[in-house]
Image 1 (cartoon, one colour):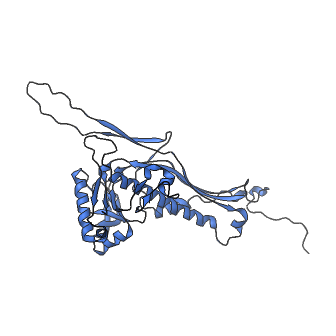
Image 2 (cartoon, one colour; image 1 turned 90 degrees about the vertical axis):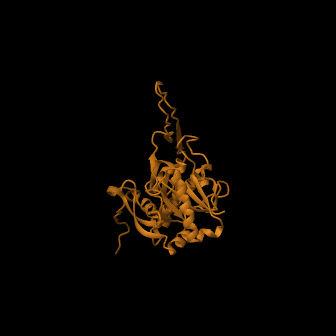
Image 3 (cartoon, one colour; image 1 turned 180 degrees about the horizontal axis):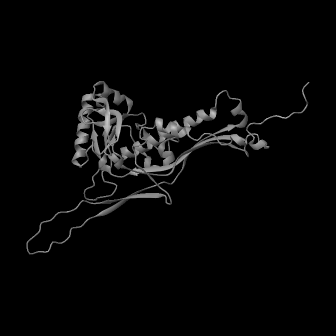
Length: 329
């Protein structure tokens, strides 16, 4: 015969305390980060500076030196050297949050919190890629370097196709990339030695691969790191296919989930004619105050579970000559 009252074991109560959920308040914190690293195509490529104790990180630039002739009997005067500065400000925190009722968590046949955390990671990875690629595309189209009219610092490089259909023609794309890299080299940028990467949408990538212009290979960065990648056979430049390359008009007003709506007007732009963007890490100035963090926790006040992921970062044009785009007419 069962007793009317009896002792039970609550395995999630700390030291037999009164809170039966105390030991499960804190949960895993690595799911979002792991998903981000798997999904992001720019992760590890962009040199993101830590912004601590301030909101702004700056780069300083020096103009090229001037030469002169020594005239016998005349003491040579010094030539002028110009300096400039560029900066990026981290002024907002981006958050992904899901809230789950207490009872629902225990009555679901799978761990919804884990699945949500994975989706947070996918969304953040896509969001960061889009933000960096947007800034790279905008940097390439600058007619004036971000440091101003500083001697030795050039504008970006733009190559326009003759027809929209050329974006899927391997031979015409080959010619366009050749012109792009040639113009970048005229600005003292070596696409291979300066670690330039090419980003295209999947349809363009497979058009190039069918013509065997893009092959599997090993890319060696300037610091000697070996990377297994898709390589443009003619120039040895890595080619990355991604649906995150913008081909839409980024509008802070009409795209409530767009990059510009969350990051600000610096990310507004029309990218509907963008075919490819090529840039090195030197093209962008990026800073992070809060690296990606994630947490799954139970709130005693609201009696709900929260699945959070958040970060604070920003990017801006830095060296326009290290970026180039191919556009449709």
